[in-house]
Length: 323
Image 1 (cartoon, rainbow, N blue to C red):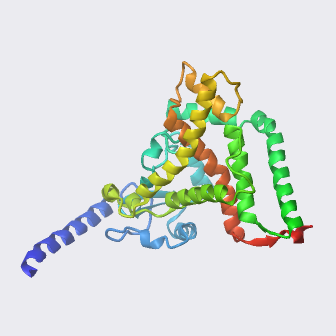
Image 2 (cartoon, rainbow, N blue to C red):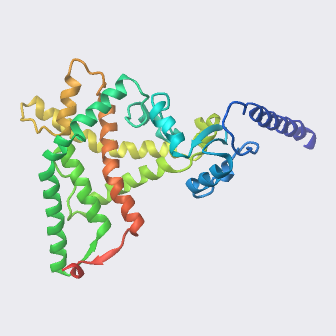
Image 3 (spheres, one colour):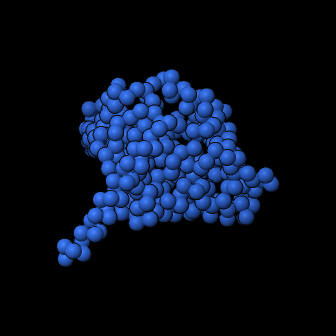
C-alpha cells in the first residue's frame, strides 16, 4: 500500500512546491504584501474581521498591497490617495466586478455584475432616470406617507389591544409593501398577515447570507464546478422562489395590457414600455426584469434587516409603552 501511495504523495508535494515557488516568482511588478503560504496563500491572515486585518496589514506593507487569497491574487487600496487612483482616475478600467460563483446564471442579467458595456450603461440609465431620479422620488412621497400611516395605525391598534409589537416583522412588512407598490402598484402582504411577510423575509435573508458567505469556489476557481459548499445550488433555489412572485406580477400586467386595461405608470410599466422600444439596448427580457426587481427588493429590504440585526432583531416591545 505504501509503495502505491508514495509516488502520488511525492507528486503532490512537488506540485505544491512548484506552484508556490512559481507564484512567488511572479510577484515582480506587483505591490508589496505578506508572503503567501502554499495553497491557502494569505487567507489565514484575514480572520473573522477582514477589514480590521487588512488595516493592520496596510500599516506594514503600505496603502497599496497585494495578497494571494487561495489561488486568487487581490490588490488592496487602503488610503484616500490610492482609492482615488482606482475610483476616479482609472475608474473605467476597474469598474467591472468579479462575479461570485454562488451568483450562477443570475449574474448574466444582473445590473450588479454586468461588465461596463452599452447594455450595463443602458440599464443604469433606466434605474437612474426612472427609479432613483429626484422627480420620481418626489412623485412617490404620498406613497411613503401612506405606508407610514398604515404602520402607525397598526401599532396603535396593537397598543389598544394590549398586544406586543414584533418590530422586525412590521418594519420589514412596511418596507416590503413600499417596494412592491413602487414596482407593482400593490401590496405583496399585509401587516395583519404574519405568514406572507415572514416567508418573503426568510427568502431575502437567505439570499443575502448565501451571497455574502465565504465560498471556497471564489478562492479556488479550479474547484468551482464541484460547488463543494453548495452555495450556488442554494441560491438557485432561493432565486427561483423569488422569481415566481415576480413572474405572477409580470404575467398579470401583460394580460391586463392585452385586455386594454389602463396603465399604472409604475416601475413595471416603465420597464415594459422600454422593452417594447425599438432601441432596446438594455435587452429587457424576462430574466433581466427579474434581476432588476431582485436588486430593488434586496436593496431596500436589506437595510431594514441589517438595522434590526444590529439593534438586536426579534426584540418584542410592549406597544403600550409608546403611548
